[in-house]
Image 1: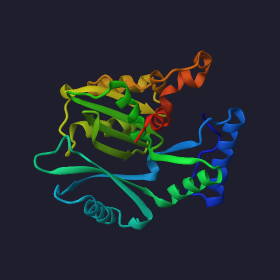
Image 2: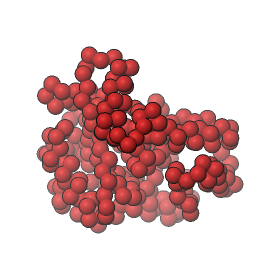
Image 3: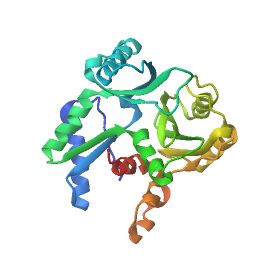
Length: 271
């Protein structure tokens, strides 16, 4: 479902809650909910992401404190106590003897407002995730685990692109990259694949490549395939679920299915 108003977390809190409520009311008027459980995906502009090395002997709590300290150095204008930090250890792939982790942080305020909205509507909040990471759940569901080679996925939305490398159906690299215009997308992606200091990748070892996001055109995919010598597949999340026959005539389904990968992906998430 698309709505006329874009949710702006920089607005005043009453306005944010009102926008969420208006969208929710439109949904339940058209079709009442059958579940009280809800999940949310947030776009890239509400996250900071970085690959960080870590000492493998550190326990979980010490790792978290280390990553928070690293964030305070990398982003001195942010107050780390105002952020919620999560990390994914890269256990399946390390560069030499160095262990790395994918570390993401988002604003505590945003999560609090989402939680407040859920409380006001008697909803059970399950997950809040980054749009690309949620989208990759569709890949994990469809291939059941890639045993050899790498899987690369791109997510394009607004003024951001992101790149994920996966192996054995787990992410081993993730990066969010701001772009000024569409002309920067392919050069930025090319740099990620050819000059990456964390992951040494060449097209010969990439077994699968996917692309998702907002308004990803076939023309762009063809350019990406030619530039990177890959075969990007546009993700259709509805291939993984049973769809009622009347949905096939919906333009959103037939023309913009790829735009719903993050929403579908977080619905597929079980833990």
